Figure 1 (tube, rainbow, N blue to C red):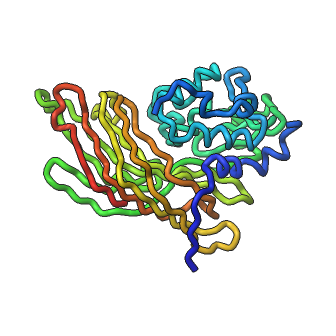
Figure 2: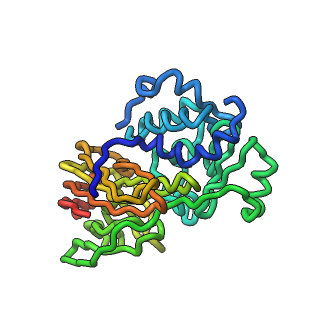
Length: 329
């Protein structure tokens, strides 16, 4: 039986993914600078910076905040973090083996996580490390320190990170490379890639990537939260492929999606579908759009995403850095 739903918010599902522990652990409780115009006063009062770690008054405050900052763009997130007096994981440098590299958090989620991989809901500390989300009720800093010293002592932890989506075939055509990737290892589905070189320096190699990612967080009895998002990015080739920061014109138009997943209640097949609004961004940052979120027994989903993807490097000397694709994942 086919069932189609529209809507469950990303923030609500992230909150659901931690609420079983949080509730029992609580005690009492594109680029606009006008951040407060989009975040209610009650939400601002429900989150505070405590020694460099954001603390949300409740699971509701967490998901309201996440929904408020989702898909708002890099400038908005910078201003929001500045208003909190907070240095986020999102704002830091992506380092090989670091938290953003290993978990590949959606950027709006990384905006509430500090550089140590932490935030709080009520009096429960959430800490991310090596593919796991650890939960420490009672704001037990000594327990957190012990877990950091020996993660095996953690009493409440769930898997988190990117998992497999669809498998694909490799195709190469001239300077344009459309290739498969090894899925399930923080790679998502990045089949649309184009390599190009500097006009006067063949050793300066860049590539444009159009991709979709599936971020998941386990939550025990509540199943697994899955966040599907799409991204346009640029990388340069050094000892390995690394993020490139040249100004690039990016857009997605005529986008649509369907997510197929199994219900956590009866394992029946369900669908979440909708359209992606026209997106455009010109800067040196990735264009990231959160498509949709679902809860499943294990975090496995099948996604169909289509749209017209465009990228053009605007820095002099990279005339080959332009690509248009009618993407179909």
